Image (cartoon, rainbow, N blue to C red; front, side, top):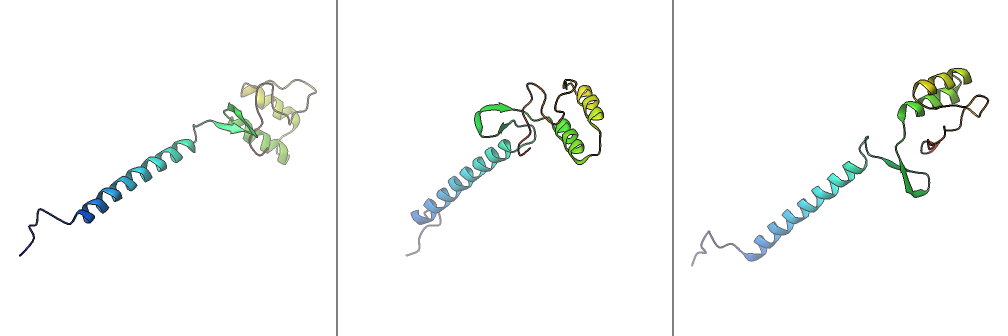
Length: 106
């Protein structure tokens, strides 16, 4: 007459398992995306996906200030030197130092 409360319909059990699997996959995908976009994660530069380099945010900010005209070429050279980047005298101060890739979009 009446169904036992311990034996539900198999479709309901299948739907619950499918929902749990979907949530697990969604959680893994979300964690991977968060890891890839974290601030400390290195990013590809330009179109060369084989070469990976970290972009120095302090040097990027220094370049922006120089481009806006907030600092002179001499100040740029001095501050880049303090950050550990060598800017040869008389060189194009807007170009990246040797071994330093330009920031994305810059």
